[in-house]
Length: 170
Image (cartoon, rainbow, N blue to C red; front, top):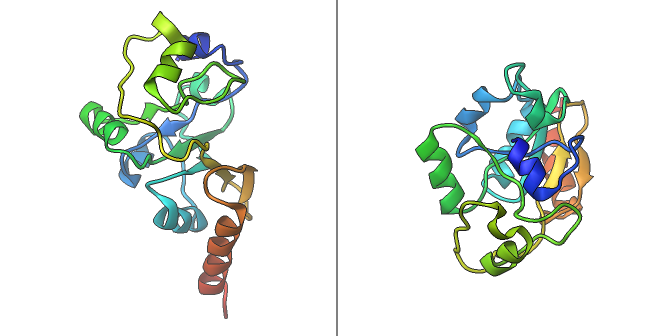
């Protein structure tokens, strides 16, 4: 984790997102998952939704920057899923850029930013979209969008309304 912060020149007060291959791996890092969080997972995972959930006490503080929350996502790409499954546990999954610089969408762009500071760059062609994930905090009663990304706010709100209609109706 220290190396990730150093290479990315990322401030230590910013937590690192965690990638899982499937929801069962949440047990390794998350203390609890609300019903609204599960509903959102069903609609947007795998994909561009990062959910902020209560962290498990055993998750190192360096990952969460000392917070009691952790940002989690299932990527929609075979390579990180295969890496996670091969390791048998979640991995830290952050963009391959220097903090405050644009996220690269090609291996060449990643190499231009990170150079020889990383051991390996896997070239799988151009990243689709070029937008960051949408980050939603689901630790409270009402989901809160912390960062607008690839999933539009209106889609998030629509799923939240669907959930409310199904689960909160008399």
